[in-house]
Length: 384
Image (cartoon, rainbow, N blue to C red; front, side, top):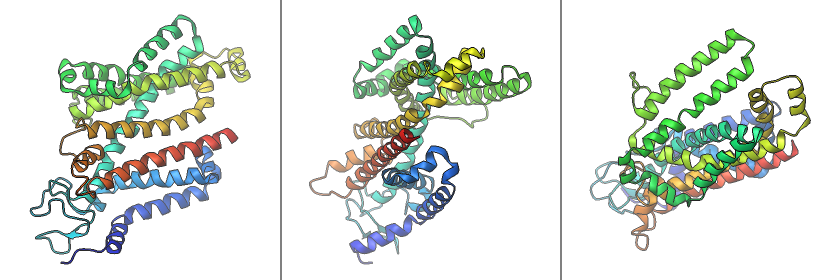
């Protein structure tokens, strides 16, 4: 077999991403048709910057979902004679197979590693950001609403965490020496409780006068929440449904711990501003409980800035995960994590540029998409 030309490589790559193109077409078409019913998301189609960001983000989300169909081979398989082969090189002993983006220094397919690496990033960054928002919202609302000593104490703790350089704090939390002390496990035990607390408060404040619905929702929340909590935080799920690898748990907890204080400060600031509005005073006049006002009056009216920050924070987290992988602190040493792949490729960058460039471009385009999406959401939320 002959080596593929640049145009042939491009055409074959387009073909490999066929499930992504189909998914993009369906999602964007349906979203555009029903945009008037989709709130802030629907208004996003009036912003060219927002649409560009949405396309980039959806591209990588769909790539992660269909990674097994898109990847041409196993990203961990080493093929004899394919070390550092250039893009488009035919795979020895495999008729009709090419390394579309070349091989790395361990003779693994760069294209497949780039595709599968999207699963690692998109499995950690959004979920960890959601947990960080649960922590920040649950603590930020009462701090801003009540003020006083509670606000002072919580703000001091948040500022204490924020006083550490982010990268240094990450290094401290994921190093083997810290892991051996059990600190990440303790943090997981504390931080992973906040989603349960948040939803319990949410349902209690809404259905306090309706015991039937209240007990049903609280029961579901506690059963599912504690089941997931036991498996994710302590690997004690008897059914084995919820499980998190120890290395992944350390990174996940580190992301939540580092991001939570910043979210707390944003929520606290928004709450201090919104609690002076007329509709909050009207709710207090009606005799509504404080947590009802915080969760059903203040929080919905803070959704615009929080949604924008959520998108930006996923981008920050993606960069941090790439940085950890670059310094060898990723999930596992052989994983196709983008940061780790970039680090492996940069060692031979002067001789072979192709192993480092694809994951670099992938990381850049995902973060760019999240930033553009956040800009579009900010632009539309200000018009709302």
